[in-house]
Image (tube, rainbow, N blue to C red; front, top):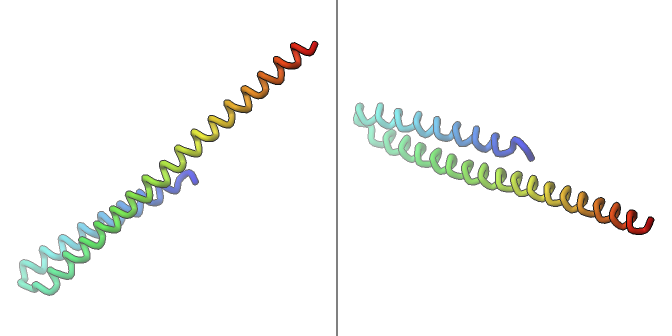
Length: 95
């Protein structure tokens, strides 16, 4: 799953950029007195910020899963090394 969190981080950045675009558009329309468009762009910015927050949560979850998998792999390798040492020790005692 390596790289999965990167995709979510990239999606977060896209949402943040889109939110900024909506905020700029809201300011543009506010200068022209078009409240309906201001409101829609502000809602769009809020929607994009919520999308960015969701992507941050996904990225954190995937990164934690990746880290947990690495820890588990390390534990398994340590257990296997211990088993090999024990088997070698038993062979030495048997000789």
